[in-house]
Length: 441
Image 1 (cartoon, rainbow, N blue to C red):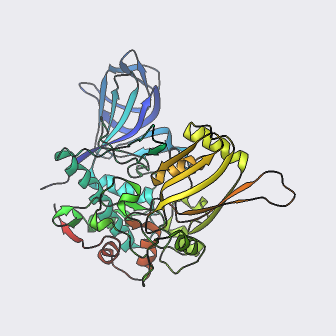
Image 2: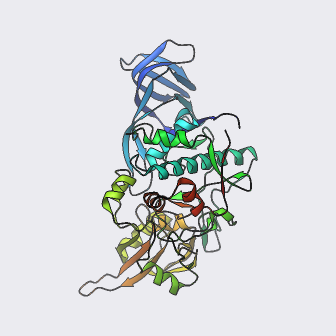
Image 3: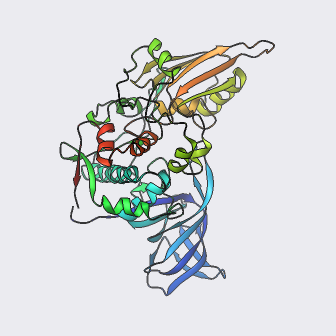
């Protein structure tokens, strides 16, 4: 690869109307320069673009607006954190070109075309705070670049990565959600791929410096670019790839201790209980609010007690959540039984027993979805049923560890390592076993 590629990012998908602002001059296909507030509507298999005076400026199944030097565009009311407990809407501003594309079903997709390195500047500022330690920002730049380019290589090889599998009729529902091939763009802008919130979150030149100083550098394993996964907080032990996704082992995505010394992998329910109820030393075990403020974006700081956490439901409340999220009526909930855990304690197969039916569910993300109005922080949890004094209803108590799937790099742990003077390459080699860092363009 001689030069960085242009990539396409799906900003808003399956919309009927989108509003925003062109901040500077943009040129449409064969049209005069346009700028200012706009509205784009999907109507009769076409996209109708109007300006702030409600004059129609374009009508086509596909509209491309090319940015002049120094111009940006804003999108209003963008949904972020879709389905997670931090879901919200924001106005966001982006560099690069703006594309509107009609889908076969008549809905509209909004796409940002941008150079890979400019994309990374936004991703790092969106995933973590721009005030985070420089060596962490550099590590994240290499990490995010690797994840993206690995996906491109998989497409070139026409690799077919399953998005979900189901074993219906057997009492099992085993699903996982990977980076499916998006049909109209390379990656989406939300947590499903990598957070990409434009230049809205870029408050310092430090992120640009981190991207520039790691320009073209990626994580490799046996001369292949790594599918470099990451999550917010591993809880002290990272997880194996196959606990969260396809049933295959990836050597550089194997469980490691997120500490200067070893932590033994979880093998039994007794070990899981001891681990989750403990407060072990780990890089991601930080209670320094000042440090977290430097590491985490504002909405992530709303999530408290992520290293070890507790969630409680009444039996009736949990039955309602399960009915809504799974689509099954379990009747009176009797038991929730872990059947298989990974080495970090994360559950990949869970049995739910009710008076009307029993179902085995997996993998880790589907388990988290079924047991929360949004998502549980992780699937590394213990569950107990209690009957508090003076209360008629039974309560289910979840005690858990970590935030996210736990595979690959632990973002909070990596940031803490950077404060302890670890270099970017040392941080990456801690989380990804047997890898090398190489410059490919």
